[in-house]
Image 1 (tube, rainbow, N blue to C red):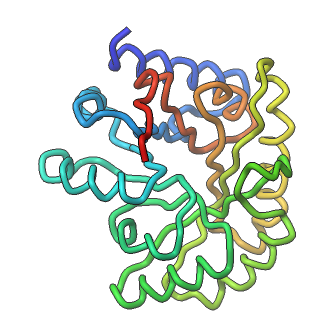
Image 2 (spheres, rainbow, N blue to C red):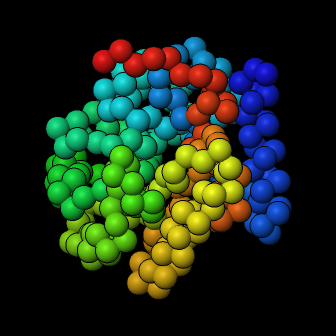
Image 3 (tube, rainbow, N blue to C red):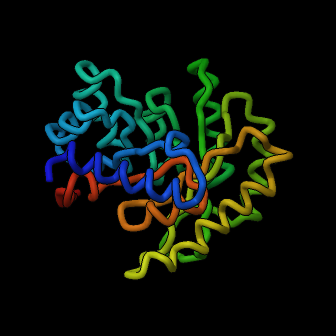
Length: 232
């Protein structure tokens, strides 16, 4: 299938999962993960209506932004990968949503730089719901502390949470990890009503994530196919 057909196929699965769980598919944002995808394929996706794009690597994002944005300024960029503080400059002010805030120190630096630029930054807290050491993200207890600390950050908006489930051949096994994040989100909403978003679900498990309450799904290979190898 071409990219347009792939997008339609993914959207149909989102709609079916939404219907199964009594949700409105219009509540769910499809983010096409464009990491290590050629600019030509990205442009093909944008022309097919895929306007939300997610990048994982700060310098790759910087390069794509500079090349693509002049001609494709309708793109809504998301940053979804781990970000080192010395690379904030490549991302800040250029993305609609930063999905992977995972420490107070990163929040402090983001807030400082946003203040210098006179902007507000929309962010999600990354939670490691599986406890896997190979994954970045905070515990729920660390998230509680950051949410309290975030009240001091005038230039950051905490809009919700992101997680990655472990990989399973049987995607049904990913369900508890998504459910755990939704239950946490629901528990803290009274105190933090702005933190509504749930970014969870990727190519292999986004249908389960939608059933469990995802408001954003991050889908790469199911749309763009296999990625180019990263040689740095």
